[in-house]
Image 1 (cartoon, one colour):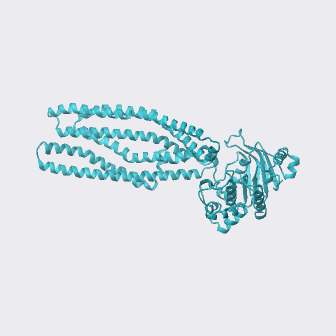
Image 2 (cartoon, helix red, strand yellow; image 1 turned 180 degrees about the vertical axis):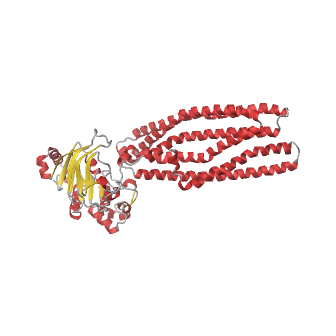
Image 3 (spheres, rainbow, N blue to C red; image 1 turned 90 degrees about the horizontal axis):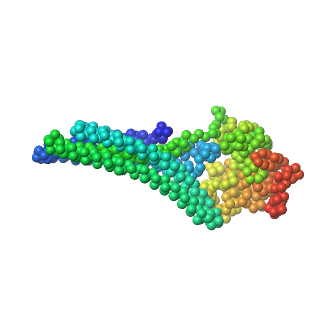
Length: 579
């Protein structure tokens, strides 16, 4: 885990090395300062020698100023190194997520990934800054101060050898209790993020169903859980402070009592006693800082493990050694295809699918909810890999293609229409970054989107809010269709992507596809029979299987499921005019 994290230090190695080196200089000076004070007292003040007071006082001031400068520089370099480390770590995680397959993404919720990219990285960043500064300073301060204390008076310094092991045992016991709680807290943070995201995305539904109070109760429950967990962890960590203070006071009382008697007996000088007090405070303060480092590392350890989980997650989709980079045509063939999201052959979503779609055909897919329509088409651009069987595009197994080359030739308009904050032009150019304004307009005409875009005061430069919330459902669908058309794909998949447009507009879009995209294979998943009834062939799916393939008239005669869907829509008045 540590090796994986340190690989993200990158070009900030210089700052990461300079910070502890400068801290070393700071520690050396701080350890020498009590000796200078001891000499100042014994050789200057007690002896009444003004020249020694001025000389040692001047050296003491210079040492303090240099130590202060070292401290400032160490802080600056540590902050730069930690910020750069966090930026690299966040970038590496984000890039890793971009390479995930849908299967990998399904393993991590969106809320969990957001927490790991934000809260968890911030925790690790703070921990790294502490490690390269405080975690270097404290052990060195402890070691050198203890060494100097034994140099000043070995007998009095034995008290540290009694207190320190007891302190270490206490910190170890606190750690064992606290770590599982912090690990649980970050899992609860995932839930909190999920609750907030769902509420914000579905705020219109929440208000429409007057469920504000219900949502508040859910949020309150998760937030209370975080509060309870943190309170429990802090109660345990609260033992850290009295443990440290008890150790400090025991040492100081012992040194005061025994040291004073030794000064009276002239077995020790006043300056030595003062320096020993300073070394006692340095030793115990370094231990206190170590305990703070220990607490922070305990918290960040849980975050680090969650981060490394993302970094270690490997995509289950890979390019072959010599991938095919050219898709000849839009022919699609499924041969004995079975698929399971969990990769469990006993829990299949698709079972023994055999289907052939000729290049340039328009194919409709119809079936009830959960029949496997979307799952089927997601195998074409290899968003998932089949569990059994094979999918062929242009006569080549999709697993033999270069992933980017394959997906460049397959355009999908998904059920959930996703638009990004930016202008309409910027959103359309997701389909083709080099598209000219004329190509944008042509694609929008095919998708029946040009009319409503020009109705906006700023036309194609109209700014869309995140998710396209300032557009209607039908407008978003048409923009997404236009965006897909700009790819000029060999295969165009519309996954129930005209459900929010009226029947007339739907018919015009299909008419434009037939006339303007004769060589593109068009696969249309629809709930409305009218959207697929003029297709070259219609695929009827039920319970993960292809139960019938044929034209509209054939299926009305031979397939009961298709006939029932058609009859129910006709009786309900749905698409009656088109029918």
